[in-house]
Length: 326
Image (cartoon, rainbow, N blue to C red; front, side):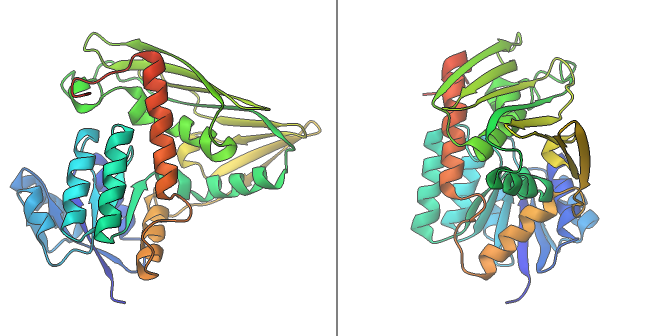
């Protein structure tokens, strides 16, 4: 099979990081970029060597020189443009959260199935080599039975433009969908779906949620999770079991090392990654498409459904709403 040809829909900050990491991966090339601003698309294309650039998303989806589309718009554009891309026969890697609610994610998966195309949520942490190794160690019982998990993700964002992505409810702004998704994901990955959820949120004057604390109750464990925009947090994840404790070192969602504490002794293990870390999800997409797979074994459609259902449940508990909710 020839190189897999990528098109980027929405050349924002995250798309720049993605395009840099794409250059580090075999079997892939950036061939096209689409933006609602033709000059922005042109600048991006020139920076990363794309042969085509378009001043609309529709034109990108019509290109015959693209096999897979990376959706990098704000959250509210994910479902719409992923569905339109798949209806054009394109494979899709969609930034997290895949949709802003369970109904959107279900429509996206249905469209992927109907059009026989690959669809994956770009939850890059799932493919991080450190996270993969930690998951294996937990499953093997290296720290015994997991009884406590603590993970946070927070940075100061109260000085951001209120009309921008982070603090604007019209764009599904707020910490939960933007960064709270990571701690929720880690608990789900290591412990599965909780039996009970407790949660509390604080809100900005715009109506956007700016702090959320969550407790996931499991049969034999609890997970304490946090996201917020009012201050920075340590962003070290702690997984504690009956025989020891494992720490995913800061910033845990993009880590290159972890530590294990047993019998009052701590050992650190380095696990290098390629580039910033987006390379690993790109490698997974290439592997799936080259093998004819329509979803990833590491992060499949059901995983994305479970994750958005957990986020929906937290929103229901805390009163996080968006103007477009029905």
